[in-house]
Image (cartoon, rainbow, N blue to C red; front, side, top):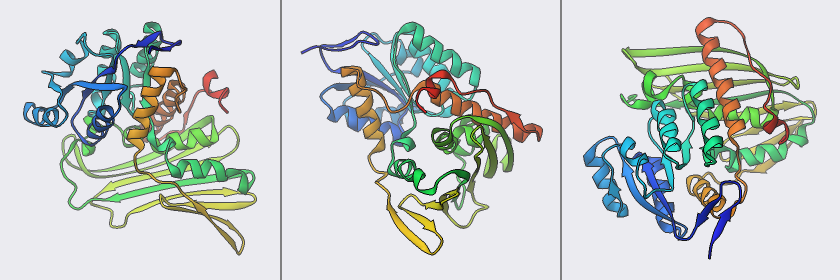
Length: 345
């Protein structure tokens, strides 16, 4: 049987041949899903070190590529999945598209907005899939928030607080300026939640603090960004991690004229005076597998994805505005919503 995606003209006579860049947590979950699905086959993997790559490949019966550059040039791949450090996302995506591959990349698409724009333009020119994973939008928490918004009437303020203590803060790439990027770019899901819920951002004001240990590394960071939306909503994203924090917090609060919503990753609550109503929050488990399944279904049958490149790029522009605000101490204006997002509102 032949399945055809009419958008890209991708025809599947045999399993979709997949290459993965990366050998970490996300790569492992992707590989497990690919190998368990009859629509796909994991062919090759490129990792940071030969030893770890060989070990990873042995577990999945895949071939170890010499480098990501060699991997994207292979003729026996249809799809490349990018699960490596944030700094390299844009370069790998562009190279894979130039070599006629469909691409899935963990967020962010790039640490540079102009590079992200080039990748999206190239994908359109090549008629290839470019999917930027934003699994938080698939999760039970975000779905519960979206479904509950009408309960509180007109929203005027929202606050998303995530604090992650780590003792000691290990010297790894997620604590490295050059590899992770500005914290709200590297952790762009915080801001993408807001733009998905409230739409167009008019301006961003952000303060950031780093506890640097040596050049390019820090042991803790704290970012506080205030977003003003065209619809009047003011939203605040607070993101901190490292060994200066001693209590873990993950709270999303939305204030509306008819009530308040308070969510944690496990549960939600609608507060209207003395009345409090519990809101069920679905699971966070299995989201990488779900994302991978959605991609395979899209390539096989053209089934719509849950997120488009326009919304991902817009969230990146908002995050980059936060970076520039923290560096200059000024409010930064953000451009209008792209047409593709307006049509989804």
